Amino acid sequence: MLPSDGAALRDRVFAELSQRLPEDEFKAWFDPSKVSLSSSGSNCELHVRNVFMAEHYERNYRVALEEVLSRVAESPVRLAIRVNGDGSALAKPAESANGEPAILLPATIPASAAPIPAAIANGLVLNPNYTFENFVVGLSNRLAHAAATSVAASPGNAYNPLFLYGSVGLGKTHLLQAICHAILAKTPGLNISYLSCEEFVNDYIASVQNMKELEGFRARMRGVDVLLIDDIHFLAGKEGSQEEFFHTFNTLHNAQKQIILCSDAPPKDIPTLEERLMTRFSWGLVARIDTPTFETRVAILKRKAEARGTPFPEDVLFFIAQNIESNIRELEGAVTKVAAYASLLARPIDLEVAREALRDALEVASAPVSIADVQAVVCRKLSVKTAELQSKSRTKSISKARQIGIYLARTMTNASQTDIGNAFGGRDHSTVSYAIDTVKDLLHSDSAFRVFVEQLADEIRKSKL
Ligand code: ADP
Ligand code: MG
Image (cartoon, rainbow, N blue to C red):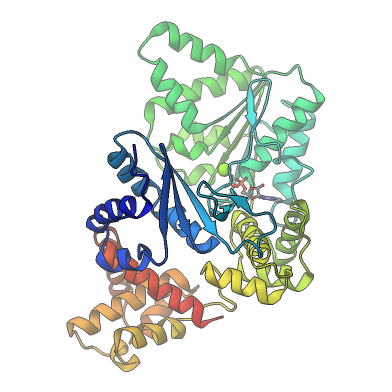
């Protein structure tokens, strides 16, 4: 059982957390004036002031908090993160356990994919929103979309295999599942199997010990009419699974059964992928999904805002589309954030609200970051001069600032290593690489350093708003 006295509970939990976190970080996020805890039975609530704090705790501290709470309670504890409001500003205030007006963090707030109830049809677990109707077609995904629709219309006869690739958050999973939905709607009798490559690998490993199970696994994989495997790049470095998949592939392909794969890289760039698989993956159609153009981003944002019943004015759509370029999942996240922020403060969705909502989330900058922007913040925060960053000086504080500057320039701007080397006093390629690696290593090993560098990056982004 947890202590029912909120203050006593908080003292115990925070005391333990203070041991785990760097002092600055602990002070910044676990000051009793900012957060409080309450409990009833094995449920516990963390109360925070706004939706952005909620998101931050969700992302960074939920696991640690649940661990500590479970230890204190000596049984598993589930934590809910709640945003306190004054009631009046909330569209629909919900009652929290202790009667305080609160709203639950909207499920879609975390940057990661929102948990959407899955539809199960023919034993397939599919996201009901991932349909062709909900997929916005633009220059960047036109080919992949066209190929996906023709495969769905005539499985086994169009392109075999269909191989889609592109970076994260660009709609690969959406298209794969849209194919499933379309086939199920048209020919419900077809035997479709949609699984992540990880599931394929895990099922294979689990069955390999036992001949009977292995036969069962093979029969399942090789007996389908349509096989879709998501994130096939997960086969990298897994020789046994590659071998098994090779045979699965051959059996299905010979029988003219449809195979659809997606990956974050084209077949030739999947590390350690066997040559014979690489060639097979390229037998049908390999279609790349690019990052969406500005117009497509606007169209996607518009669709997402309308789908949640909160149409956005055009200038807001433009603002978000200008600032979030690379990832459609982030575009969706931005829509949710702006809508949640406006509803929380009972304000209309306008440019000002969008700016505030997204500035607090520290994700967007209104103009691209330049090397000079990075240097300006690094110099200000680390008390060095630009000339010193560019000098030959090897004084510890200066070379540290220089390395951080080079790293941030590399990760936050589009500049090449050569440009960066030039901007930091004509340094050569290997010096630039060395600086980046050094900072990366430190980011891994030293959490206080990581927090510090993240704060610098936030400062740089803010300087552009
Ligand atoms: P990937 O599998 O490539 O990482 P997802 O398919 O999971 O990306 O897409 C990320 C999010 O973006 C999903 O919520 C998806 O619905 C949405 N999305 C991606 N592309 C589009 C598009 N063209 N139109 C509408 N929504 C899209
Ligand atoms: Mg995916």
